[in-house]
Image 1 (tube, rainbow, N blue to C red):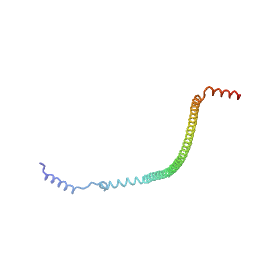
Image 2 (image 1 turned 60 degrees about the horizontal axis):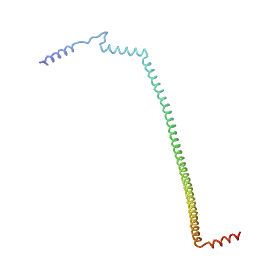
Image 3 (image 1 turned 180 degrees about the vertical axis):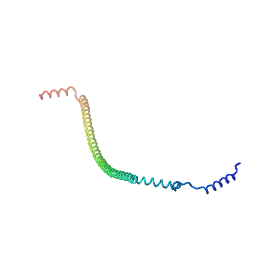
Image 4 (image 1 turned 30 degrees about the horizontal axis):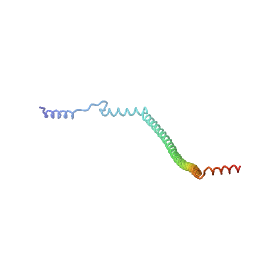
Amino acid sequence: MFDFNILAAAAEAAAEHAEHAEEPTALLLGPGGWVAAAMLAVFALMLWMKVPAIVAGMLDKQIADIKAQLGDAAKLRAEAEALKAEYEKKVADAAKDADALRAAADEEAKLIVAKAKDDASALIARRAKSAEEKIAAAERNAIADLRAKAAEVATQAAYGLIAEAHDASADKKLVDAAIAGI
């Protein structure tokens, strides 16, 4: 097993040695002083080479580029708004045109329906007149047929009556009267 007492004794010995040790120096500067001097030298060199002016110039150029981009973006936004307004106007005009076309189509449909009704009424009237004429013609034909049959029946009846009532002497009288009339 590991003995923790040995470890504690070694830590105490290292702490005593650290209290009595002196920090090394060079040209009257310790390690922290040399670090500070190096930093001051770097800053002085940066100032002598005008690094802040170069950085400021680069930042100014970036600021100018950003301003130019913002200006371009504003112009593009204005153009987009103008295009949007133009297309909204076109959509509104198209809607008005569509409404006008719809109204014209409705009116034309009403006219077509009215004309179709008139045409249908005229056709019905023509067909009714034609049917009435056919009925009248059929009635005339029926009356003519009825008259013809009545004349035929009357002729047959007269023939039958004449045949019964006339004998040869009556026929002789009729022939003599016809000859005398000539």
